[in-house]
Length: 312
Image (cartoon, rainbow, N blue to C red):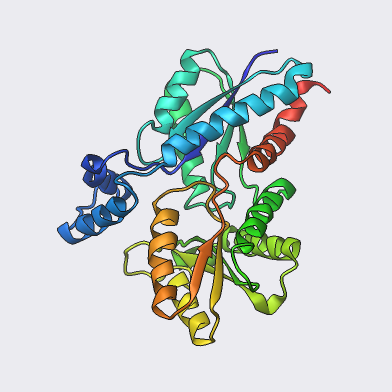
């Protein structure tokens, strides 16, 4: 049987500070970057080592997932080859499509490394993919994995990492689930993003056996624009918990599957500093990254879409 290309798509981030201004211009669709904004983001990246590990980890995730899928599907004769394409930086989705087309692949499984569906996030990735395929010419079958927010393996992986983090505390912590904010207007557009995130939080809370009054969902890393963004923001949630005399807080970033600046700075540095200012301790569950339980979960998710190809 012909091979199947698996395209992992992620946001993209810089490999060095020299790329920062061009990267911010890309994210802002060419709108000028003020010196203040550039300085602020330079400071954030400096504090996490001067670059983001996102591309490196995404490539590691792709390699591990390729190996796991090929192991699982070997009896069916299906072979997978994984490619990586970024939305806002190198290697771009267009480059990945050009590479897999040059190698003769005509079947692509598209997987955005963001579990929750939104026209503004996952939808944007697939729009770029569609354009890249159209420009590449030829007939290509695209299998879209639109969301996987409630996949049992994904929920189990989050819960396993959360349980490990809970052991850092002598007393049970208050659990805060977080995800990247989007403009609040998506709620009026019937976008599934907010609903799916609350579903994920509830499923993980149930898996952990958390009482309803011992956890909360919030948003983080809102964009710098005048329009309202989804909330409540994590900064306010932490302030409120500290006011309520919570001394132990565990953040579980359910909207992120990889270490990058929104995790390493926004949670590990900024959110933790707010808690420390009030005499509270804040810890974070480790990112899923390439943990075996997460790679197995991804293989289950992809396998459900690839299974009809096996002829079983």
